[in-house]
Length: 349
Ligand SMILES: Nc1ncnc2c1ncn2[C@@H]1O[C@H](COP(=O)(O)OS(=O)(=O)O)[C@@H](OP(=O)(O)O)[C@H]1O
Image (cartoon, protein in one colour):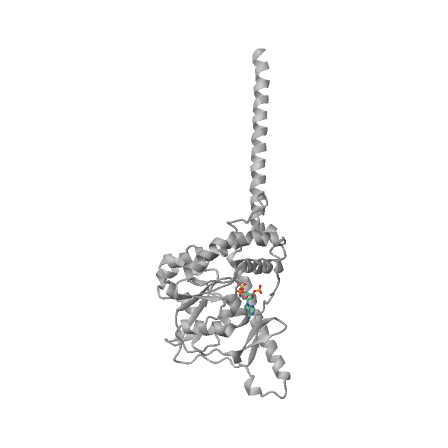
């Protein structure tokens, strides 16, 4: 009898234990789910997203070219010989060479415009793909031959330019790149990391990849402080990223830093500095670019065509002063380290 009285009690104990375990398990699952949702809100960009954006960019450039051609057909009085778009055949003395100059970053500071505008100098050959990103993901998957296939036709003395702004924030790329070619020259266009972050956030919002406020995007919802491990926040720690390239072996003299804010308002002066850094003839001049009042940006004239960057979201500013001031505090030290590292200051807030 005693036995039967004890058994139900033991069973009840077991049932309680099972219920407890189920509750703990359920809570853990819920927690994991919430963490995943939080990570989604941070929206760590997938590399593919980045590529999609650039393919869209390539398509836009093509459309732009086509549109310009139609517009030109309507311009009866204009000397058509100046305006006909002829893609030249690659000269027989030119072959593909691997890139010797790379734009390593920073995203949303004008990398695409820099790449396009540098192509105005006939000593600079740019890859057809806006972002080849060989050292980022193609290094493991595709070999040197694939890399060479992505390269434009060039002569041995030419500058061959590759661009991949996601090199800058990568942990592995600097070493991989240095082992591959320690003589590369690196171009880094920078802007206020807060402005960069806001531009990136605006991109993601416009592409409907996020639907949150700036504060929700970058602040930890429990502490209300800037999330230091948020991918887009970390990207703005320029000193940290540049140091990785220097630690890998690159010398500071191999790196040219371009002021993205100046580049926006006076691209030609900044492009001349790049030409000097690359020891090539100053070819790019003011007659090759023009200011587009509607876009609020400089566009370029190439082969008689007017080519503007398709994105030009421009000029959007956040009025969330509290979040901006938190970001300003967050980036202060890193900015100072960056200025010290490159021996140049920028008037960032
Ligand atoms: N001439 C010209 N035309 C258009 N945009 C210009 C130009 N010069 C500089 N910029 C600045 O470039 C910003 C976009 O930077 P990226 O090309 O690096 O963007 S991305 O990383 O490819 O998304 C872009 O950011 P937004 O203003 O947020 O659009 C501009 O600030």
